[in-house]
Length: 406
Image (cartoon, rainbow, N blue to C red; front, side):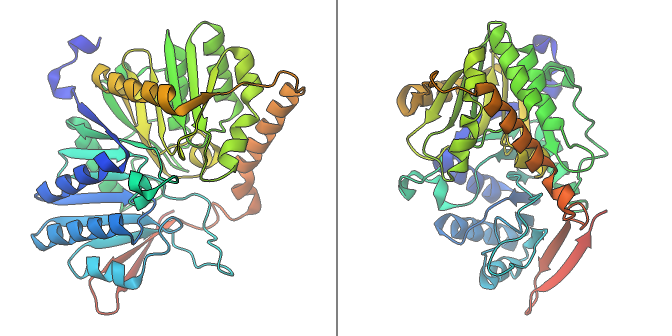
């Protein structure tokens, strides 16, 4: 089917690994932009990476490029007024998704965050993945440097990503409702009509699309699956599909954190080890440094790269975006990168069969997952308040303009 696809629908993909490849390419894309740039990120820090991005954006704005930057109110709440003013005074439109004041010094807006990481220029090129604008994604940060991935897109999908980012400024909580239909439960990527698709997750029109796209890929797998996910704690249905694929003979290798940035990232998947091991899934922990990636590859041509973890926050609360591709070159490159990770930096998990209660632990994990999935609605915190975008424009006092979405 893919060989007969019209060339007009083909997209070209390029894998980017860690900040060493991601940050220079983003800078180049912004420097070469002619008309408009949209940038979304969960985290933007005032460190050497954030300051370099700031300078690049300012230079582009001064030469007449229209630039919109959106950060998350939870992930980027530490930015100073001076940092933001430098951008807005150069003409950059700076937006904060759902900002909330701290309560007793604690960030209170932990639920339903804008977790996407997207850079798009002129509708011609886009970069999307899991890498934030922080020095934590550079190797010279030290033992806590994060291992992560992004993908560059050229072709009609880049225009789709560009339009999505533009729409998100109008409807920050549910952009894309007019353009993206829900993912059909078992539809493989080729049925999307091209070799790649943007799949989003929001809390209105696309609450399960990324999870369903994963399930569709796993259900269609014939030979091999590699999943590398920094925060792995999916619901039972996705776990069941993984186990069933392993039982029908698909080789499945799961890479999770062995040196986590948060201990829960290591403890949560361990509740699932017995169930997955019993099904024949090969389990590995990445032990060189924190694993922040959210990627997977299946057989010869299926792959996904994006911002979505396989945990309750990403699958049920956050705003997320992944690229799902049916492209042999991208899948080959991603598979090679993950094979190197497995060979050089991962330790196989040896499940202790002497410990009993594997089924009990699985059901405890299921209960915990669904509690976390439903807790915000139960608590009355969400969706009671409307997600809003606070936009800052050039002004001596930094004006604030709030846009509420239903």
